[in-house]
Amino acid sequence: MEGHKRCAECSRIGRKCVNLSWEALDRTRDEYRKKVEEDEEELAKLLARLMRDKKILRQADNRAKQKSECLAAELEASSAMDQDDDCPAADACVNLSPAVWTTLDFVNSATDPFYGLGPDTALSGSSS
Image (cartoon, rainbow, N blue to C red; front, side, top):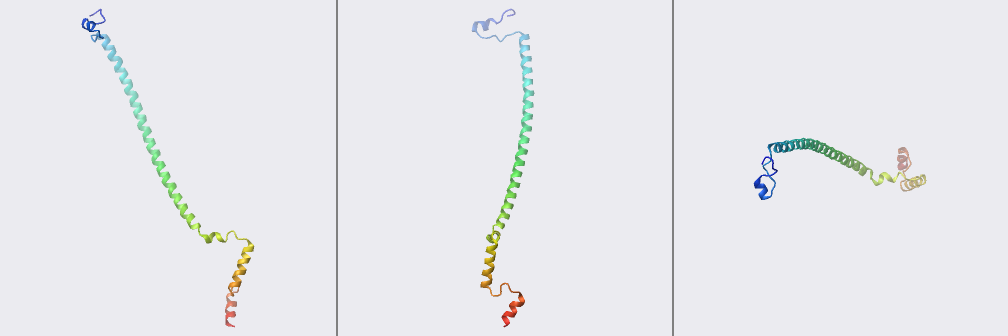
């Protein structure tokens, strides 16, 4: 088998010979051992980066959740304040013109005989 590429049995069957020289086997083993080590190093780097990225993503998700809860609380608080301001009477007097105020004053004086009089005048008016 020394000078031949294949042994007699492999030649007869027609398959690749597994009875190679020790040097060829050693080269193959060394080559693939080196490739496995390189792949393991690359895999370790990828796993470390993956774990770091997952940690950062988890922290960002937690911060986003906290921020959304904070914004929801602020929105709820401002909504509660807006509900207090939604009183119909609160806006009724804001947009009235001076003519409307004069008319309201006239209506009040016409319906209430003591409107516009001081406390002394009202008492003296009721005694006579």
